[in-house]
Image (cartoon, helix red, strand yellow):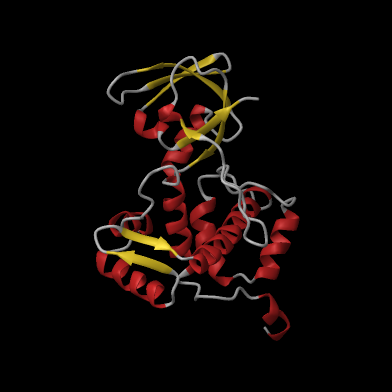
Length: 234
């Protein structure tokens, strides 16, 4: 539409932007690690893509100077790739909030729906969605929404799997999974963003954790605890 040409997102095509956003997500999990390269196998798993497709997409993104690729190390976003990734994350997370708050979708439904919708939405419509949703700061899963200029302050939190008993009251800041079944299970346990909890016991050798949520107790596996981020209650 001619009247909206000035609001279209500039940069790579809509089929490429979700790949940049996913690379950013995976790299962000490693920001405290020595190696922040994202493996192409891991990327393919999260994008549900075959190795040949991953190789083609990596080649296109590298050709456009949006990422670096080192064999046996993986991929890393360039400055321009990071800018586009944060732009796409803003769009996705605003649409997720809109779907939950305005359209009534469950938090386990919004990510796949938003991923399908984003390619057909221009920036003007996305900003209207943000306005109708109350100008949210976080997505339904607790992740911060980048500012319009792409600025995003890293969250100071830790995965629940790294918490020891006796660390006191904690607040769930975000969850890292987008798998519908896991999100439904977390909701049934009461483990959603802003929930307060305390770690009572952790079994050795990456065994389960016992949590206290209010007056109730929950036991979750170590692998699930790795997908829940928490911070101390002020």
